[in-house]
Length: 289
Image (cartoon, rainbow, N blue to C red; front, side):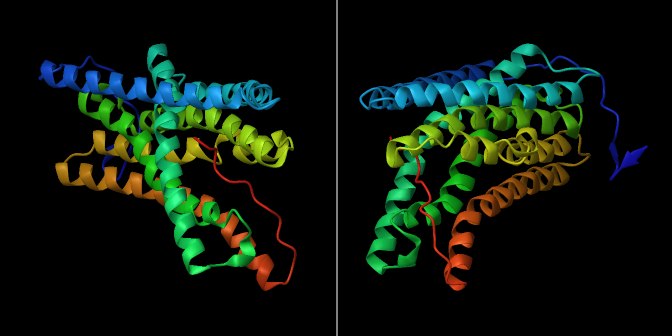
């Protein structure tokens, strides 16, 4: 059976032939540098946490719970991949990319966007009823989709270019994308719990972890990047270059849109509550870097 002229059943996995070894070595060198920068940024943030009483403990407690919840997501993905599973090192590498490289590089980039949006909001006195974190509420639908989805998509593009045999079917693409998203969600969830504690002095384990691990972790980053992977998976088995490009762009566009809608819920709720003359709760901002 075929759907849109694409095979429903995955093809046999084959080995890749690296046609330009020097290009691969150059890309790996760049990735090593970016990984170093991401790790340095995360360590700097954790060092800052250590200067506040109880903040580091809250972060690692949240990380412990998010580890358990992320494990459930990975188990489901592994079950979906049970017929001819991806190598374990691929699982580990994709989770690492999402948790460390994507998160670490996204922190300063997101913060820069939030800062610029906050300056613009203050200058124009826009939606003053949204509280002191209105810059975050307006910046989240911009920073999250553009910065985070782009950084996570780079891993899928890297695999598509150099190790295309891993994309035997669109399902493989979704699984790999979801693994990157699961890794990102694992670390970011703990960051936001720690940020809420540092900003408001309250524990938001239930709120942050509950919202980020809805549908066993498939209501957020795992879904968003899974859509990108799904598009690239279809591109990998497309019959023509034009179809491959369209599939890849479509998957990434869906991920951007889904992430934008998710991040825009905060400001949407604020506007609705203001329209109904209801009290507006304070909504925490982004992790400081």
